[in-house]
Picture 1 (cartoon, each protein chain N blue to C red):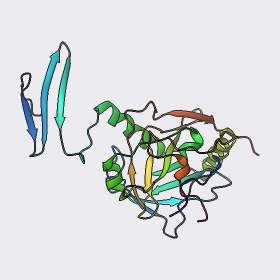
Picture 2 (picture 1 turned 60 degrees about the horizontal axis):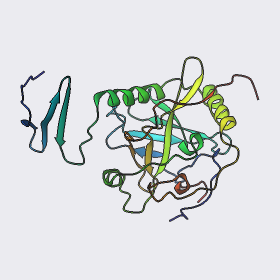
Picture 3 (picture 1 turned 180 degrees about the vertical axis):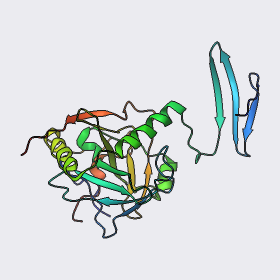
Length: 103
Length: 150
């Protein structure tokens, strides 16, 4: 691991287009400013690790019988009275916009 | 273009109805960058509201997916401009959304609502969204698997 020391308001570059700036230091907490192209995903490591774990967990336990059992359990637990899909102007996508079968 | 407001029963899975079952996630999934190419296997969306997303890059990876609206009727996502660009959706195109499912050792099924899979049904391009400013979790508990016969 490369180790660098930086003071408040000093920054460093990762490649040509990612800048990380130390904005504030308060006890154990360091506030960082990150400038990167929008195409670069910036994630807290613990969130990344949690999502990675969720993906590897989802990729396990699949036999035909378990698919049937899981599907059946889900169908039983699904809300029985569907509310009419409503468009929420604040959020972009609603479930009503799914491509439905048989188009 | 299909009508955007076709009511949909929550117990049915939204399916992508083209002959080609392949779906490509150019960036892979979060933490799993080699999981790029999948086939979407929908056996009977009306009978069972789940589909299988089987990796062509990793033979050990087959994920069970469901409609997040079935899990959480109010489920909504906000696509960023980058999401739209990655999915080649244009300004008004809408993705099909799936959430992956996991089953714990004691049989509880949970859904990853924090990072749903969005798929452009036209180009069959996918991206795992990260709703990290939402209250959704990766382990939204839904139900316990019953082993009794129907």
